[in-house]
Length: 386
Image (cartoon, rainbow, N blue to C red; front, side, top):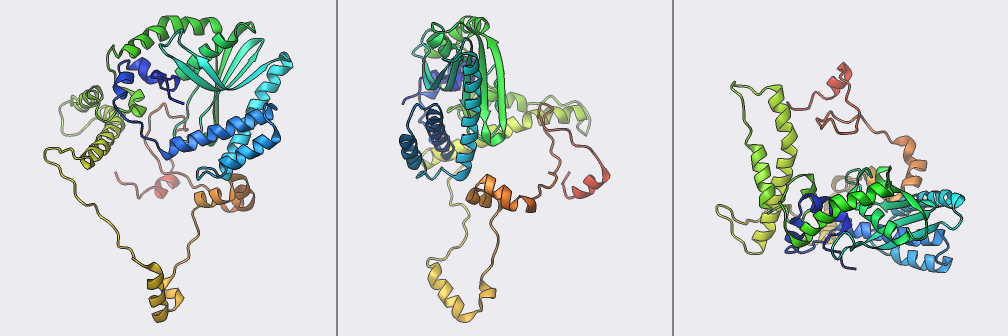
């Protein structure tokens, strides 16, 4: 199914940088293993939810799960994570039907958004509708960064579409928005009144969507650039990062703590931008583009045997096995993937320990507790370079 130009999933980007949606049209979609894995997870979640609510038979569920299980992206962990997700959806549905016996579970709900977004449409993973309450649940299978439901524009847009779809059946006054991230063990829920959500749509969403559809408005670089197709070659992002790099240093041979803190705040953005530009330039160079002062060369590589089996035969005729073979246990992540998270924990959990991580400087907005300075910890981390 094609994505809308102004897709709800990209709303935080095209609302902040309205011309970006049209700009991205000139870039091809580059699929990734992460996207393929996420798509498969959503397919499995849909099947399990429909079976839970008796919308499909056991035979159909088994048939579809068997097909999904053939994918290289399917593993025991995916099954465990998504059965937990379905359990959460079932809890929410049970609560809704206790209050409203004819409460609706709408899975992969197709939503018409054209009232606020030109040519707008979207698909919500789960919508539960009961008297007074509309609940939208969004599954995010990625394990990159936690996502909060608070003022989440994607979910707010889904909420609008679902209100439009079901308000004639129920007296809906509260919209509950939930993001479920099983691989990060995160469930984030936020509520907004139906009236406030509609006001947001009229005062903010409509105008931003109009500008974005027209490709007008001002370019703006910020965190929303992360998933933009044009992020590597966008002039606005380049200008913003170069502006940040032109730091106004005070007099003196050494940086002050204030100056170091300011530099740390922008260093990560500068590194991400430089990495994006480098990756983009490499792909363009491989397609024939030339850059002044740069050239494509063959990178470093490691030697390999053309026929490993033949090499083994020769070596075994000369040396004993202990001289030519090594035995090493697979890593914990690979073993957990092989056995499944639950089985791994039951059988090997008692042998696993997670050492204290090395101190790392991060923003105060990071949710991890602040590291406590003590002498034993300092001794453990003496190998950290200044």
